[in-house]
Length: 265
Image (cartoon, rainbow, N blue to C red; front, side):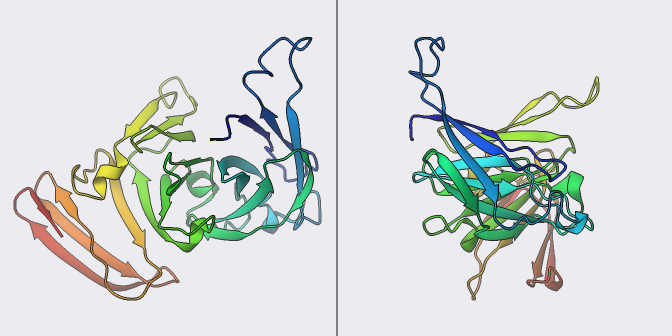
């Protein structure tokens, strides 16, 4: 919406960089030959909570590949590589203005505790209506919605597990709030593909949950009370619902045999 492009040079696999920079490009002016165009603006930053370069590996959480623009600010999501892996992605906010900044984490969210390869954040995207945020890893995607202002982790969230494990590196919305995901080509037969998910139709039951697209859905609701959700099954099978507490322990569960294709609440 800002009419600018942002290129984030902030990869930090070894957690020892001090010179992260985001280039803000005007596509009408910066695309011209340098003699006639303008230099991109530079938004430089360092992490205020990083004291050592590199820190102890238990604190390796100063790498980032994921960034979104939202309401005149840039939001960065860290790529966790702590050992042992704790799964938390930190969120940092930057003004959409050239300068040199020190940024502190505003919040954090646990993508899970399976490990770096499965749950380190590799990309982020904001929906066109600015009401949904996506974070992806190689193994899953998280949807954040019903948030207030830029408190992305303060609303509701849903977790979708990909049906294949590849090095997924990018996600983007189309104008209907469906998703494109791409993965990196790692071998002659693995990766190098684009995937299309009609994701938002899951919430209203238009598209069935099938193992060909997703294998698990996890919905987190912070408000007390009951939860209504729709499900649609294209074939027979067993529907299982587990309820977890904040420590990710099952406190209640239920199973239901589905004898024919059905849609229900």
